[in-house]
Structures are given as C-alpha cells and as structure tokens.
Image 1 (spheres, helix red, strand yellow):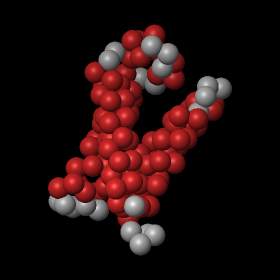
Image 2: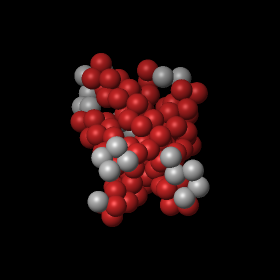
Image 3: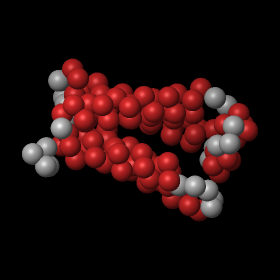
Image 4: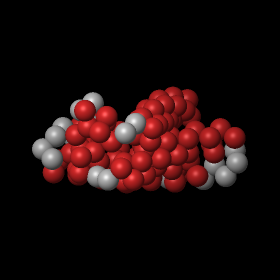
Length: 121
C-alpha cells in the first residue's frame, strides 16, 4: 500500500506542479489560446493564484512525507487539492466543458489524503 501511495503521490505531484507552473508563468491570453478557455472567466491574478495553489499543493504531496518534517501536511495538501479540483469540475460543468480530468484528479488526491491520514490504518 505504501509503494502504491508513493507512486500515486509522485505522479500527482508532477501533474499539479507542471499545471500550476504553466498557469503561474504563462499570460492568461496564452492559456486561453491553448484551449484553457476557462481562464477567460477569471482575472490574471486569480489564474496566477490557482497556479500557485496547484504548484504548492504538488510540492506538499511529496515533500513533507519524504522529509518527515511535519508529515501531516501531506494529507492536508491532498485535501486542499481535492477542494481545488472540485472547484475546477464545477467551472467546467458550468461552461459545458468536459470535467472528467478534474474529477479523476480529485478522486486520486482524495485517495492520497485518506491513505496518508491514517484513516484506513
């Protein structure tokens, strides 16, 4: 179970860190042009905040648990990413866009939150 959680955490950390960095460093207009049309509904600052949240969440999925420095932050980071992905799914559904990627990512980070919180132990 521990190995499966580590693999999942690593893959999710990469996905969130990459997606967050892209939102953080790319102009909103470029994101919209690259088929992230949801960004048109948000200000530049809001898109940057979403990107920063995803980047920090991705780091939080791995760093605290790996370093054993305040490891309780890993399930907290995962739970926060669940909230972000829930919001993303709502935005995509309202815009009549596919919400499946956000829902899948949300379910996967929920598994990390549950697995690392010790609820099932």
